Length: 178
Image (cartoon, rainbow, N blue to C red; front, side, top):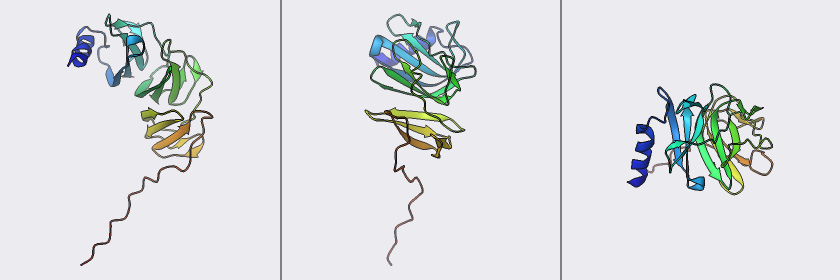
């Protein structure tokens, strides 16, 4: 109940930009920040493209900024260690070209320019991460120049597509005896 009251306070305080679409939100205990993701250009009068961080103690916009490119839409968030993974429809972060996935520092929003995952056309709509892999789901067609229609698992160590991939084709119905 307390968490929902806190989130209601954030929105009722006018922090979220008018006319914006906030597509995913996750409150994180690291640094007491609430990371917001969606389709917006400003938060509390400050430029923030697709992702922003709010201080849960003051309910004010944090200086944290991933500096995504124009028209950025962020649909998925995942965290591991000191990193925040972003997925969506964007082509740059911190002034560096990226394609739909970025890894930024939780405390500063600075891009990890060494973490490059090439995602084909479409969007990354959801993310999950474990100790060794980043899982992507969405409307994309390829990852790391290999076919991956809608789902992929990428090794964090070398940013390659893991194999075997899931076969998402429906199974044939079981035989029914008469």
